[in-house]
Length: 207
Image 1: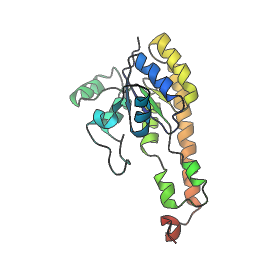
Image 2: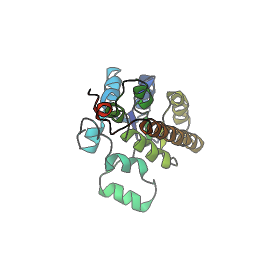
Image 3: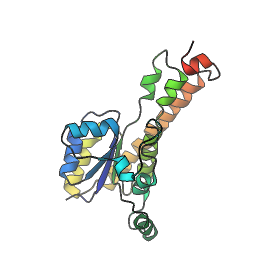
Image 4: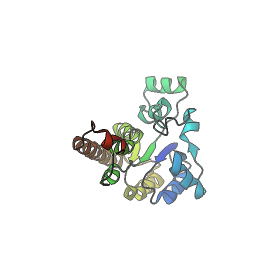
């Protein structure tokens, strides 16, 4: 039986998600999600709780704010067994999140378009995704974080065998996260450095 209680899944690359999420569900793990990821899982008969229901706060600002909430980040970041953290979790009605599977808006793909404006590029800068990934990676002692569908099978196998992933696997996956977020931020910085944001035509897409 899994010792994991809850997974948060929010993906741009949804390959293999129905199999992975289905196996998590079979292991008794509650699944939280947003938008198109939640829709795809429901289409495959997987029970999903919307993050907005979990937090009690709606998505807003055209989806710019979805997962940036204490109930999400508290659930990811709290130190299990720490008396002060346990008391604060109980006092504020927070629940643990043990697995985070997220991949990011495809900034590189969007900006490969020669006609991409700064405004379009900015809308493809992921904020909530890297924030959740970094939080989960920081707390790898307790939280499993996945950015690559190629890691789904090992994670499921370890949960089946041990009730959770091993610390070695959680550490390896955390390193993978910081490698990804570093390259992601570098790609954004390099692209923005090559454009003239003062040029209104390029910024708005208007002639």
